[in-house]
Image (cartoon, rainbow, N blue to C red; front, side, top):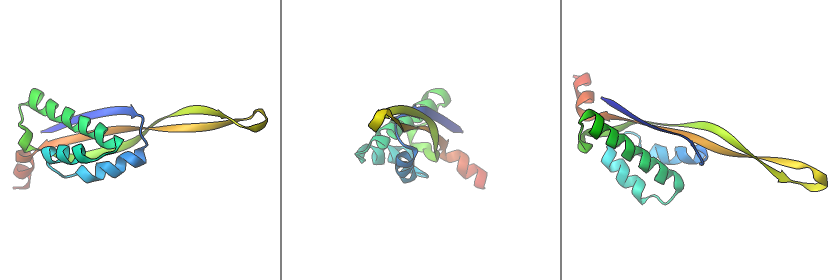
Length: 118
C-alpha cells in the first residue's frame, strides 16, 4: 500500500531541499522522522511535517501502523518563481527570482514489498 503526501510552492530552493531529501530515502518512516528532527535547517522542518502527514494518512485512512511504513520515494521539484524588483542605478530595475519547491513523499508498507519479492 503506497501512501502519498504532497506540499506545493514551499518557499525553499529545490537544491537545498534535495540535500535533505537524500538523507531519508529508503529509511523506515520513524527513523526518517528522527533524522529530520535533529537537522537544523528549514527543509528538514518542512520534510518532517510532510513525512508525519503521510504517516497520519497511512494510519487513519488505511489502518497501517507506524513501524511498518518506510520512505519509498521523496520527490523534489521546481515550483513557481516569485519575482521581485530591486532598484538599480539610473532608474533601472533588477529582477530577483525567489525559487519555490514542490515536495512529495511516498511511503510504502513493509509487508507489501516482501510479498512482491517472493
